[in-house]
Image (cartoon, rainbow, N blue to C red; front, top):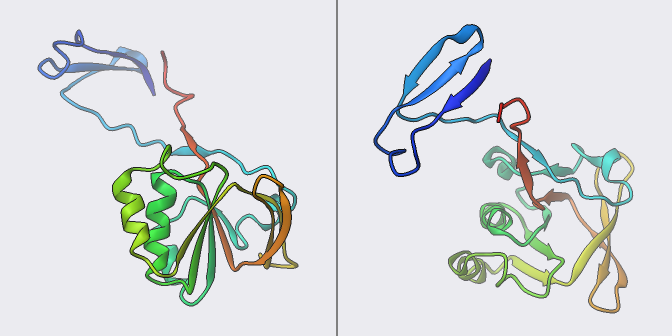
Length: 177
């Protein structure tokens, strides 16, 4: 395991090699390293979510999931670039893709080019000021309960899949200071 990482000064960082010190004081001199230890997804706190995670509710989305969405009603929670890119991907397969965004618009959280791309997709809808209050289903996700608009009017929507994109944190707890 990694015991420490010694970096050159910030102005030298691109020119000087770095040293990774492993357990047992073994040293590796490198010019670059990639640390890909995964992420811990922020959890959506809503009624029914734990029971249906993996059964219609997913955190993040892999390209391989898109094929299984052919002809389905997909909902995406989140208003950032990752959520927008997932909506673009799923729009090529799903009957409909609805983005559920807590805030008043996408402008503060999503790049303009992603917003522009979403606008070209006829089967993508962006709903703002919406919060998922519950997920429902016997064995798989069947519906969402939503609080919509400033009045938080309750609505129930049929759904085949809910993909959650509300942030993640890099899994670096093992990495020394």
